[in-house]
Length: 502
Image (cartoon, rainbow, N blue to C red; front, side):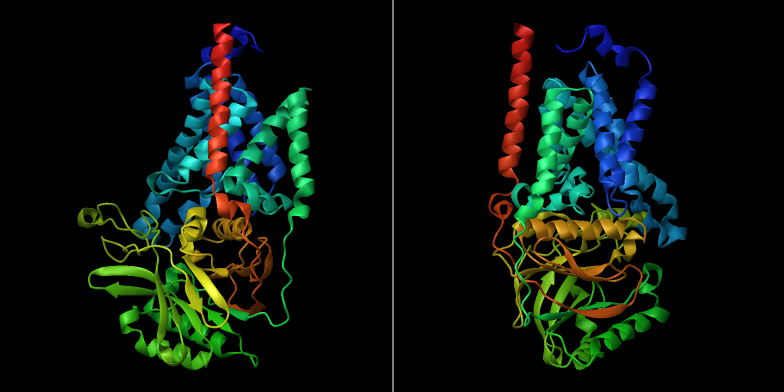
């Protein structure tokens, strides 16, 4: 043992609320590494502070409470944009906003609580802490339909370290961040182990440019037009404004002397359901000429409603169709919605108590002569597994979204950052078109090659970058890292038991 019994038990006897407040504060500071603030050095310092608090916990219960406070503080700040959807219709949903954020932060804080507790059980060292918390991040990406938004490793997206996602994936980025924080704390205490960890992380940062596998964009690369109408959510479905936004997109589609190879509109950009959209689609086709158009539209099939993407060919023919399969709980549907409708409850983006129905799953569509695309609609771009489940490797990712729901402070920036991560980890370029922004083309290294900024209306034509060769992560997924982390936990736990026996 490296610390005496009385010293380690101090947290259990007195000052618990002070420790909890410190953990919550450090958790909040850790969130400052997320977009759009991107102060990742503060995240590493705060994680070092959390590791220091964790080391003072003598029991699993104490460690769990520290983890819960830290996680709640982290998610309160990182997910503060959660209140924005409830403010679209303040009279109806506004009262829910603080409760939604508080319950979401506390619920996700339980994952950190479990991670801290397991790390304490496994001996309380750096390996145990990094492994347990990374596994907690993996768990929250899957359980209860999953919510991997604002993972710790996302602090690296706007840094050279993003390149390592092609090898270690998003969970690996989280492990690097956690190790850097713990190593920094130990290095400041002149511990050799900490210095070595910091040196390794620094080497990863400096060596990241060597992983650049960028393929030059050829002069004859397909030209893609991004159409961004900038329709605020509180006006998007207002009958007095729907025509304004639709006609704005028509004008952007027809504009320009040079014609692109593909035109992309955002999620739910057609104001009428697909089965009644014949006239609207004809207008789109006429404005586009011979250019195919991808657009978002709601689609009904019997009693079911789908959030869909369609590929429109000349003459208004629907050449391909994709139905969103990974829906937003409490946004696009409510569990037991048929019954909760009786109490006036429904998903924020749903028209009735049943909400949207899920499509059959990922599919790859052929887009004219520019290649094959994996369609993603809004929330689906947050999940690495939605790309991994594609039936075959596409030439590019095609994401349409309506980030007007997320406000204009942090949500849209974090959503864009995760899109960059999807491209980098798979070696695939992405076309991303958002209703209010940020619309962008992203290359296979996760770099933005052109964009229409948040809150602007307009269009831009950008060349589509080529894909790189398949990445290591695209071949292996998360399982090698997960198994390695489990082995690390097992080894540290066995080492602790051996020490106790001796």
